[in-house]
Length: 177
Ligand SMILES: [Zn+2]
Image (tube, rainbow, N blue to C red; front, top):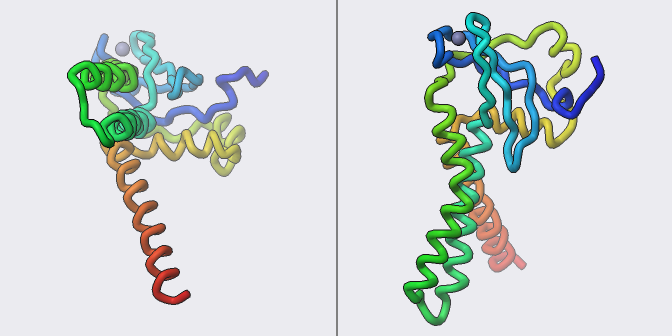
C-alpha cells in the first residue's frame, strides 16, 4: 500500500448508523485532515452510501477553545472601559466564526449516530501495531476516545487543573522558600 496522506492517519474505528438504509455497520477505512479537524469517510456495507464526517471528540475540544478564545478577547476589550454595542456585536460575530465549523460538523453527524466500535482489521493492526507512534496521530486517536461532550468539558477541566497546579506551586514557593 502506497502511503498517501490519508493513510498516515489512524482510521476512526467507530461504526455508524446509515441514514439511507438503516444499516448499523457503516465503517471508515480512510481519514484525512480537514481544517482543524480530521474527516473520516464512512461507507455503508449494504447500500454503499458514503458520508464524510469530522471527529466529534476533537470537535468538542475545538468548540471549547472557541469559547475560551472569545472570552479572552472579550476580557481584553472589556478591561478598563466596558463594552460598546458595536464591540458586543463584533464579539458575537467572532464567536460565530470560531464556532460555526464545529456546529456544522455536529449537525452533519446527527443523522449517523455511533452504533459501536469495530475491531481493527489485520492490515490496520499491521500498520499501527501498538497504536500510532507519531504524537499528532496519538493526539488524534486520543481525542477520538472522547465524545463531543467529554472533549468539550475536558478542555475546561484541563485548564482548571493547569491553573490549580500553578496556584499550588506558587503557594508552596511562598510558604517554604
Ligand atoms: Zn446504507
